[in-house]
Image (cartoon, rainbow, N blue to C red; front, side):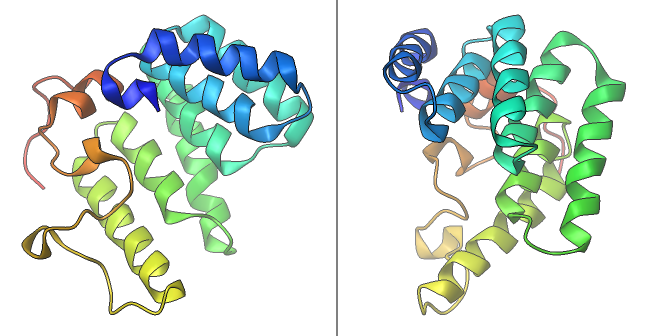
Length: 169
């Protein structure tokens, strides 16, 4: 969406309109939470996520965004607890590796993020009948959004608030 293009505030406004058109729809609510995170509309994003989880339950996509919003707010303890919930749920299966990757990235765990992202790509490729994760050497990306191509990408820094804190893999 527009958030990946550096237009997060505009994307949040569009997602808000979509929520107003269909208040029972999951997709617009998730898009709103995600773009509010990118736009650093932290308190609005937290309200969106909390309302959405009341309506849809503790869906991994909302939990991955919640980690980022809590980090933005400066509540590292709660952000770590949300990530721990995602990890615990992954033990019983059914947890998308991508959700773990996004949550880990928000916490600044780039190496763990990349491990989860590659796992997500392998899972996706296996479902499509592909031959495994498409790595950078093949010109592909481990996960969908373009700003996940390289840990030092400016878009990724803006999204996560990890400016200058990437370290090694």
